[in-house]
Amino acid sequence: MKIKCWSVFLVSVVGFLLLLAVACSRQEQNEVKQTETAERELAKSNVCSELKKFYTANQNRAMQGNGLVGVLGGVNLMTYQKGSHTIQLPMPQLVDNQVPVFYDVTVKPENVLLSKKIQVRDDKNAFLHLTLNSEKDAEISIDWYAVVLISPSLVKNDNTDPKIFAQASLCVQSDSKQIIDLSNSLRPASEDKYLKQYCTNITNFIANMEGVDFPMSLDALGILKSGMNYICTSNANLATAFMRAQKIPCRMLATIPTNAYPLEMHRIVEYYNNDVWTLFDPSFFGESNSLKPHQNVIMVKSSIKDETEAMTPRMCAMLGMPFGQEIEIMSDGLALHGQDFFWTVAFPLAEFNVSDEVTQLTVKHWENFLQTESLTSNQLNAALSSSLDSYTKKLTE
Image 1 (tube, rainbow, N blue to C red):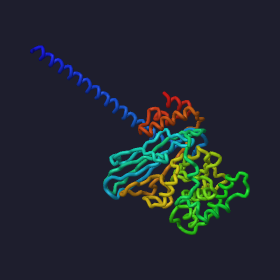
Image 2: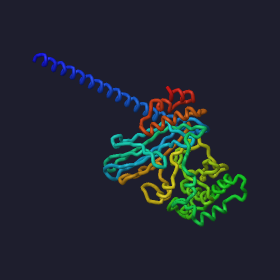
Image 3: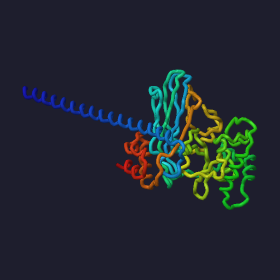
Image 4: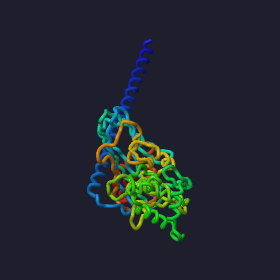
């Protein structure tokens, strides 16, 4: 009987020690995770502060080639209802010749942020979905920070059928008789360099429009009626309509020019010809309206659905503005606030030759971030690199 009692006692002691060991191990693991999280948040904060410092010291420079681009954006809000509010912020996209390296957001006051979640839509555009909770009449300031790698080669194939972008939509009325007739008048007589000349003719037409009335909407027909050519979104809608009226696939993009000049996001277009999408800016009234990849960070590629829904009223957006501007307010209770209620800017961080190998490695890191929403130490270390060797080493070590 005593033997059994001692056996039970020994088993109990051993069990207790095992449980104690497991508990200690879990506590140590939790402490390690907490330490790693704190270190990572500190690293992210450092990148954000350094991006602001770098921009302040280099405001007169424009990106001239491949390498790393810094991108900053901000929005100021006021709550007019107490409770929970949802918004969406833009993110640099993994498209064409660009790969995001770093992305983070800060909200002030910090306690109003309930959650943040990356959402990748059916059209492959990624946005950051934020849920905020605050009292009535609260001022909220949101800043976001990004670093983007610009590569000389395409980083991701676009499998979208270009024929989709040859059709009319509610804000790109390419089937309108007025737009068809105007497009025919702008069509070059010569087939030699046809599309280049057609782009020039479209741009000249937009540049020479005479304003007769305040624009009530930004769709192609709406801007023809008002004659106003100072809004890049409406110019892009009209240029896209002219392209599609001639059966040329064309779509709109929201971008941030890499010229270190703070402004709202810029809308340009790209047309499809000979299996290639080519960028051009119908709002650039100069000698050349063609664009190179390093001149813009792409934030959104608008879909036909975006064009259709652009003609449905939504908060803080004029009719005809496709989804994906500086902020999308998804619920009642919020309004833009202040004189500079939103802004964006992109600027060169480092210019260097970018290899295909390091580009594809960057793609893998970013795709992992879109799934896990956690930046790796490699990404954080590489974000502010000044050369290809430094960037490659930090991304691989």
